[in-house]
Length: 565
Image 1 (cartoon, helix red, strand yellow):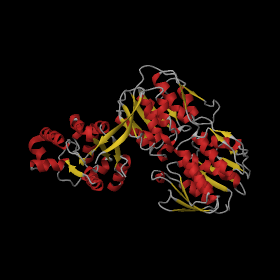
Image 2 (spheres, helix red, strand yellow):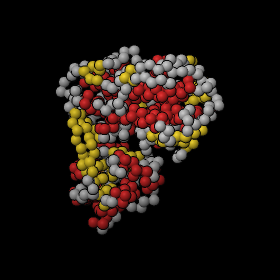
Image 3 (cartoon, one colour):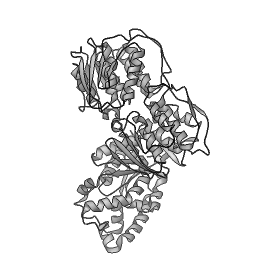
Image 4 (cartoon, helix red, strand yellow):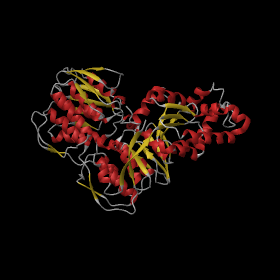
């Protein structure tokens, strides 16, 4: 087996630059305009419509609905899925709302519950709370709905946009604090452009009476979310790149991010509730900022294209940057980040955020660069006006599993090898067979130093294999030379788990030599992880937390990340 991963490498600037870049139309306004075009009685022209995977998904769904197709596929567009779910409830017929596997992992329960409050007939076709959905058109029987404000503003926007078409209109009461208020402002703004009035009572109660959308040509304003990455580069490299076409009076939340950066030094405490999509960009900047930076108001990031908070923590760890997190915050201990091969987790914003870092430090590479097509297909071309951008690939025939004992390397590796029709090699078993002793006995008789020499010799031999899944020993990363032997022809995957989970998995392992003088297994695992974690992260191309998933689920994640069908 010989596979390859597409990679973009970004070279740092030799000196600050002064140029101009162009960003596309706003995704948020584009999708709202497309939905309204379906609700209008007359046609109108949408100018500067974003041309991206998300807008194509929306257009395809609207066309399918118009053609009385029963399946509406939102692909990977979460906003499209939420908007189409609401629209299908007031459209004739029976529709199925579905999407890509990644979208089917994103929750939609609160929106479904709200629509059901109005009398909508919605069934889950798979796991409750997630796509796919079956929606049977029905007349709303109620005109009031209660919705939690701290989950996703997209749910509220979806309800607001269809409200004028309801016979009695709609009153929406928000439970708790409303997050992402600028996105609500954008919805109210575009509805107002098309003649619909919304009464907004301090973001806690919205009243929309039955009204008609008035068709008139609409021009989508340029996207502050896309522009934000270039302003971040300016802040990081003292450059003066201009983004032409931005509306200085925009309702877009990410304008606040741009305003924040024009203030000079990055604040130590930042509330990103109004611009959560740029929290990853802030994290990339904070990695270069000496001291501690805390970003609050980011709970919504945990239900986006990926679990963005964890993803950012993983990739910053590869760069040698320590972080900590709560449900609603991310704290970064900045300093001098190192280069890394970044896994964007299928998330366009992670790819673009870490590309920013590449303009400052040499050797930054981003896997799966095409992921930016979701919202900004021309990103790499515009970035090339500022920095050197090179498209490459990484070929590999082996998969190297690294991590602590109990992380799942042997179990996952064996099943993965079977599924991919590859050879499986367990490094500890290889050593035991070659030397005729259990690992524990080798260590007890000759000490850890002797065992590490045998391990290095094994690495020299095993790195010559091809078409193999190799489960490494937990300490392989202690000698960087061992890992370097595998890098030319291998992809390295860190399987990690909480120390408590590891202790449960290995407490009955009789062949486990002690790694420290800690009196408890849990204490030993904590101590060893602290000593090794930086080395694990630095040598991992991909990171998978096996704490709460089965071996088969871990394998599904690996195959998805490696783009293996």
